[in-house]
Length: 290
DNA sequence: TTGTGTTTTATTGCCTCC
DNA sequence: GGAGGCAATAAAACACAA
Image (tube, rainbow, N blue to C red; front, side):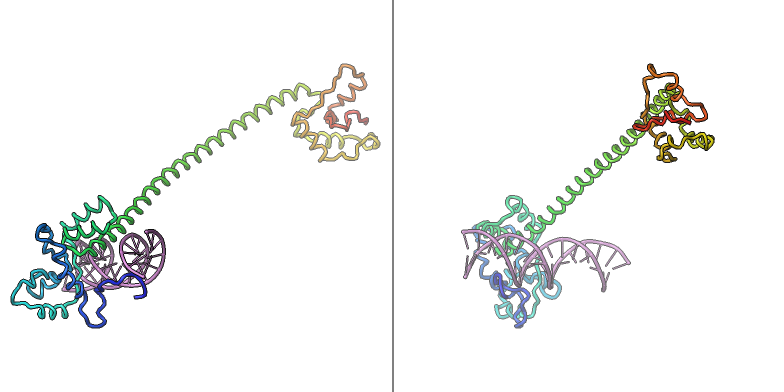
């Protein structure tokens, strides 16, 4: 063994030495130390002391290592002989022993040397067995604790996820509501704008969907158009921008109070060419001549 | 009875602490 | 460097279905 402690090995039988023999012998020698006659343990004679008691159940007369030597007919040599031919068997602790250990574990899951000795005495076990039991018990406790923690975290996660999902739903719902309200508002604004638009009808297109400029231009005779007055940027695209401008309340409302009749005429062209009531900043096309 | 999965007891090797 | 704790693991004991 490269490291760690050296314990009587139950598995080391490479030399043919009986498994656990040293433990058995040790038990026999330590026995008076663990179970003083003055304070007899309720667990005396328990099968839990590493022994062959149960392993001998079926194949040989039942006896523990403690009464084995009390039998006059069985000598130590005979015992050794038996040991050499018996494979070691693990002993399970009795219910009483386990209850005792559990109670002790509840008090403190760590084992000081004095307590270990005392427990071993009380239970009729080797201190090493008590230490191993505590060690394994701590491992089981830790596993259980991890499972508990996992369950707790999972429950919390599920709860949070449910909350999160609810919030997402509510958010979508509110979003939808905002969209609907925005839509309504937009419609209302459009309606309002259209009504305002109709108030300045003389300046604007009645039907923005029409293509008045194109139509009016097409209706015009080529010779009627003074090419010097036709802006070079005149196009469908330009026309579209005019319509957009109208639609977005980008309206020109000139103060007509001081305009001359001629000017008024130019501001109110004939229906056939009424498209030119759209103002564009810097492009006084309403003053075009035909 | 037997095969299989689970639990319990014990070992091993490594690590930390004093 | 020894004692003791821990993780990983072996192996016996046990439970249980087929």
